[in-house]
Image 1 (tube, rainbow, N blue to C red):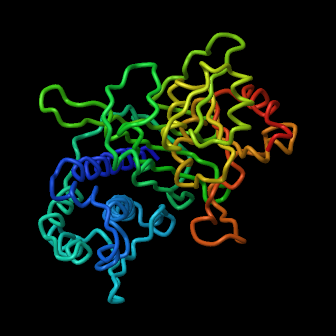
Image 2 (cartoon, rainbow, N blue to C red; image 1 turned 180 degrees about the vertical axis):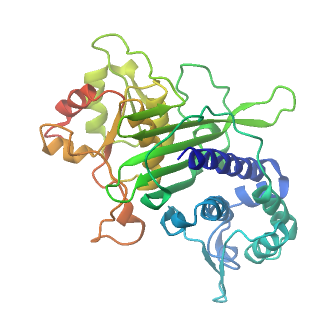
Length: 374
């Protein structure tokens, strides 16, 4: 498991490099921000470039993990389909090839013959990242790769990534939107039970290097398996007794905003972009809980940060199941079974909404004012 964690940290940094290259290199950035409309919209390929960036990162992670752990290859899943189709009915399956040149040629066929953009992207895919410093020595977990599956969210909070607003982050303060909300999320779960057992989060746009001016990232990781709970983050100190802070989506239902304003007070109710980033805020102790009443997140959004929260003594539960029961014990999210009555991505949605928390005593305090309101 330590080998798998080290590999995931490395591929998450490679993914972060791809995300940064797509914003730094002019030929790629132009593709990223241009919005095709009218006659141009589907002339070449149905999907847009930001979807391709997502797919490239996802397939790069799938490729690198599958090479090292072939027994996991069929259980590495992500948000995006890797099949691209054009208006002529031609289909291209995006994969990472053995060489940079072959990957560039394949990407050029998706990018309508744009060899400059394809070469830049292929170089980032095949480039080894700088070594990742993580204290994983001595980490032994009694699990084999054949027991595990992986969920990938290549770039969570895509809209913030495209918009690209820059913030200078300050320790201990939540910043509601900006490039820092865009995260690479890789979560590992037990195939038998669906429990999240390992998570890697990479924040590609954490700060700007004062020397070179380029973006530098930050990574977070956690392992939670039985009695083994290890995390790159320390458990945040408890806030003042009685105080509770919550982070929500700005589009959350008014009834939820009102109930939690009454509970937390207006100063302790915060809003932020990106499901992954909101759970990261809970991990970092910037908020006590993240509440979402809609089924608008998916397994790939929550698996990685869920594992980190478990390693810190917290978790992520199904809000609607909590509202129906007296305790949240049976409501913990799992990651191995689709909703068979649904189609497409909805099969993997967190349909009942969610509550991400650091301390299980917080669940009942959050649920009480919401009962009968949803």
